Image (tube, rainbow, N blue to C red):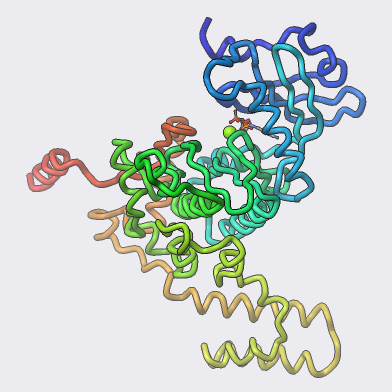
Length: 417
Ligand code: ADP
Ligand code: MG
């Protein structure tokens, strides 16, 4: 029987009486190595949940930890990190001799991975929104002395309001004070250099919480431009690039992205874990400062505007007058919004795309942001289903737009005819 058909089969009623008594299983939401996740309905309330059904029938006790043991560890960790807005909530656990059922809150918007594939890239604003939540979630996990070890867009779910829920604690581990671990686990493209070193050198010192910080850097890079920082058709080359921290901001997408997110990525993707930015410092990075502008008084705003342009300082002058005359909360708020918007626009002036030149559009369309968005959007619409999850991640392949030498040659000869 094909693997997929086998997975689609529901555990028989006898094996899981308690689960069936309480929940009605529905369609499949996702799959892991030894689990299938289905939407299910709580019979009593009609509320929807997600049930991770772990098959124990092929459990092999001779090799390492059994699936049953691993799941018990996962449940213990899930309970230990519970109670945070950005961490998935475990609702129920059922156990039978052949299956374990973990019932989670349902994330209707699925994986960040699929969301990214559907939109190709995220704006700086959306990236800020998502990354702040991811980092806050990870900070909470670390504060509970847990290292996640498999952070990636497949394991970051989105709820109804596109808020983050970190999930899949299958590789997570509780660390003792100062403990360093050596096991190689995670997903190749997201592995930190110090994890790879453990599998290559006998005397490697081991790794700790910083591996999750590295993974956050890989995720943030991927969200902004759609393709991961470390990718190569040959996995050995990719792993070498990770070890050397070799990535670049050279693809055309980066030209439209401001300095702050680049600076944060540079600090997250530092090869030496001791020099890598801490989660708390990452959250304090200027990339996340923008929201604080709303809390500031209007006076420094006026000063900043004056520095930027006379025209906008006049607007702020008017806003100020309004502010002093009498308290008109609504109007004051509307003015403040106008002023802040104008200021942001001014600051971003240098990122405004150049006017569309027909010449560039014909010879190098990928350089033009508007055309690039259309090209990438079409590529993802047609070939998006090729973008593989997990180990075979090849999202980057859809961004390979450098013409092959022989094709370029044919194109040039055709043009010159
Ligand atoms: P595995 O350890 O096998 O990778 P995960 O816990 O990552 O299992 O779940 C596999 C997939 O199932 C996820 O990537 C996601 O697509 C889907 N999934 C898991 N939990 C939920 C949930 N609570 N809501 C919606 N989808 C989920
Ligand atoms: Mg997973």
